Image (tube, rainbow, N blue to C red; front, top):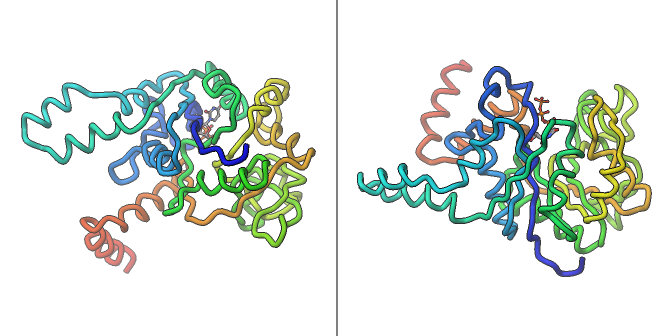
Amino acid sequence: MSNRPLRKVVIPAAGLGTRFLPATKSVPKEMLPIVDQPTIQLIVDEALRAGAQEVVVVNGRGKGSIEDHFDRSYELEDTLQKKGKKELFEQIRKISDSVRIISVRQKEPMGLGHAVLAARHAVGDEWFGVMLGDDLIDSEDPGIGQLWRVAQETGKAAVALMPVPEDQAHMYGVGAGPLLGNGPHVLIDRIVEKPPKGTAPSNLAVIGRYVLPPEIFPILANTKPGAGGEIQLTDGLAQLAAKGQLVGVRFNGVRHDAGDRLGYLQANIAYALKRPELREGLLAYLREVTK
Ligand code: UTP
């Protein structure tokens, strides 16, 4: 895949979001706001900044609000225009104008590997990015673009890796292997999903960004349910790793797990502190309540 620009990304957003119940009973967790933007909008923005032209969203039952968010909203636009709210109008119009969204359905949330497989026909026969709908990477150089460059340079699939404390490794997919050249990236030769405590092959956790070749689809179609009874993307990736075809990318940027309550609150504070109109007030409040 030499010198091809990133064109398509897949955003799996069909999970049940049980860690966020009851909020996620009728609102998808990907639509929960970070300050005033749904999490998935920040992820789509990262994809666009990396040059992607098409975003395939894997939807589940009751996730119509994601489609609506990226669609035109005539009544709202009309009202904003009539009221002279030009800036807001332009902001709202930009959301639907800047991206081509394709929705595919995952009928049952049978795991991340199964969700990626649901995007097979929309992706076709080309390399693509995967961005988890609840994982944020705050970086000027978009995370998915960093992975795309490494995949291009090496001709191998890529996953994002981040060091985590040893006692947390069992909550993630974990990758291990020798450094690629002088580093910092890793040629992954072992990758396991949620290793039992004390058995993780390294402290490098897989974070929700991937660049994959179309060959992953037949692999996933033949992958049996693994950890938690789900069809795991990690188990499909293990087959690429066994052939020396998987690189772990030590990306630049701050990652927030917006699908986790504490991670979500931290993300809101971090993004709010970057907003000039909110920063001083928020800092004053934080100082007050932590006295
Ligand atoms: P998570 O495991 O974080 O999502 O999957 P979840 O299952 O919704 O969350 P909890 O653990 O119950 O709170 C990471 C991403 O993959 C999507 C989710 O929507 C999320 O964005 N996903 C997961 C799917 O699209 N389909 C699935 O079957 C599983």
